[in-house]
Image (spheres, helix red, strand yellow):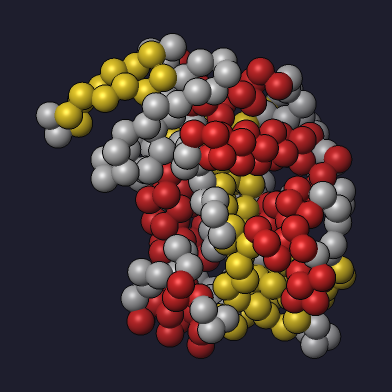
Length: 319
């Protein structure tokens, strides 16, 4: 398909073939209608009556709060579906969750498809396709890059920390433009909520060449047993970002008393949401014609799930 648009009097074309060949707008022209995919994952026992797969509504709200629309990415689909979604979306979010073996799950296979397409398309065409990975998503991201599981057990359950920012965090894309006030909040206040049994230690990171050559470490934390784990990473050459904590929960999840809902915590959440959506604005993939309407999350209604899960609301899907 070939689509032609006008921006500030400038005509340009976006060409997307099945071979995923792209012709991009100049870097100073931003996409003011970003559409971001969110990976779904298999429903657990308590969710089965609602659907085969789910997405916590907090991830949808997180993206919408920064001006993006959301498309759910279904699990257990064929390659052509993921290729079509990649060619149509402006970025993808890998959410957190409770999967014990994400790499071999429908969630992991969908994530792998986007990861590989994003890497290949950037190498071949300079295609700037951002990925945001939260908690389980960051764990999946590191496994995809390392091609093995290098995680170790951590004891960071239902707790919030300030970030221990690395000395070169200001050189990163993620924190290069951070205001001093936001940096102070991140460094001194318990505004990053953690709820994970596994993590990536600096030692394992340093010993894994594939990770060390692919990512820079932007922050660490120490769990309740004194073990240091990496809490923020970004890819050196690709717009891929991973956080072991849950920024979306500060605004949209209320079940745990250990989630920080202060105005400072809200500022931090909005900083991360605004940053990722601003990355998606640099991508000009698009759906053809009216196709977008049938894929948007607006076609689904969230279910109140506070009584049966840690999420206030979830979207459910049949796959």
